[in-house]
Image 1 (cartoon, rainbow, N blue to C red):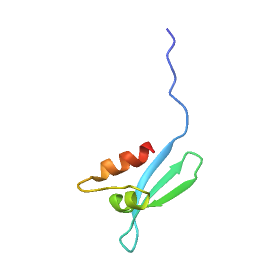
Image 2 (cartoon, rainbow, N blue to C red; image 1 turned 135 degrees about the horizontal axis):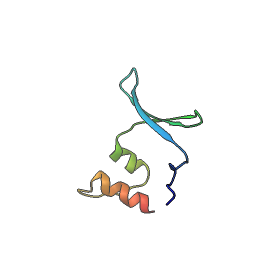
Image 3 (tube, rainbow, N blue to C red; image 1 turned 120 degrees about the vertical axis):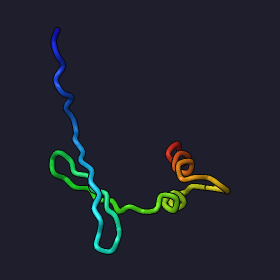
Length: 70
């Protein structure tokens, strides 16, 4: 019986950093050394900015779930 080797593919490391003015940054590092940086924002406000039509007591998870399916 042959054993399977480890899976190979893209690796992606993720870390969070705090900026000097209180902002948070999410940083992705690829196995080839590329860095991709995203600034963290309030999720509900971002959902509204991205087209969510939230009404009433809609929570953030519901808002993003609807947007994700579009």
